[in-house]
Image (cartoon, rainbow, N blue to C red; front, side, top):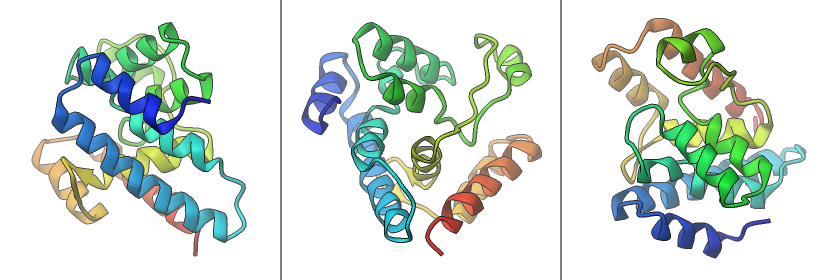
Length: 170
């Protein structure tokens, strides 16, 4: 499995900006906190996978800052020989996922981008709770999405993911 140090080195070597790397580190920190709470509640979670997946979730931002960064990051991770489970986290981290139909409409390869594993869901949720390097609430994320005219069904999906992840440690 790719280590934390190797993940940070990969972000640097591929040309990710320092602000992107700092964002990834903060998402990883929060994701590990969430994963530890879930693990303490009896869930079987791979903490190393969560940390490295969160560190690399925005790998594709070395190529683009558009929604296609998830696909670019997945492609780059695959080419670099990154563990498939980590590559899937990168591919599925956007919001609370994208359907095959939505992907086509966004110009992405027609695929299902919904997070499936607990690790994928935790990373996607943690990313929703970090703006830049600052932690925000799900209410603040919802407000930002509405301000950017994100469709209501997508906002509801993000809120549903938040509820699902937070139930892991109640």
